[in-house]
Image (tube, rainbow, N blue to C red; front, side):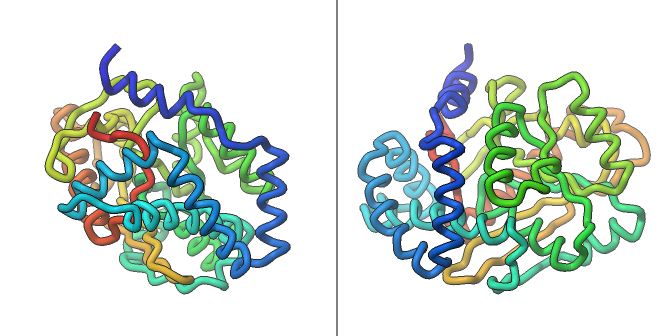
Length: 302
């Protein structure tokens, strides 16, 4: 087994901290107490997690050293974890159609308007960077019936469906699980129906079909699978990043990575590598623009 497979399987096997019942309790507490009080509770919880999770804290230190160019202290690592916790808390309200409580600045929305005007059907490539829920919330705020789905590996899809069921049950059907025989068929059907399908393209479950790309000054492994799907399905690919900027503020960025090819690329591997290079460059750009928004808490460079 490769080193990439070993480390990715390690994060995939990590037990969830909590059960569905605890998750529902947490959601109820956040909504009952309200966002201001719930945010205060994040401070002791984050400090405990920062001090008790040695592997995640080490990964945070390694990442912050690369992106900041200096060895981070406890304050920087605490800020990193706190940013993650705040985005998780805001997910409760964003998924419950309460986006009006947030200030969301959108850049590049005209790209999605143009795709929608042509009938829709687009792949949104994000990363574990900031908040995907901000994109969903902006779409819902503009048009309640906007078809948005999230494509992820089946094991994680089950966890996300459980989380969505605790917050807003009608959203659970929007998650497509990868790894089943009918996964690509479901994706193709939804794209033909005009769906915008989000993919977090910076990691996979089994560490297979990876390619090492230069990222923040050193090679890191990224999965080729999402880009193979894009090449086969011949749909536009848009990069997306929803960055948390403090308080109630988010920035949502859309950038066109590739328009829909008229035919499948003759040089499939060359097309995939070019798209991956563009994608990784944009992930690095937004990591440097908002360094505490990176939420891969394992050694990404391994």
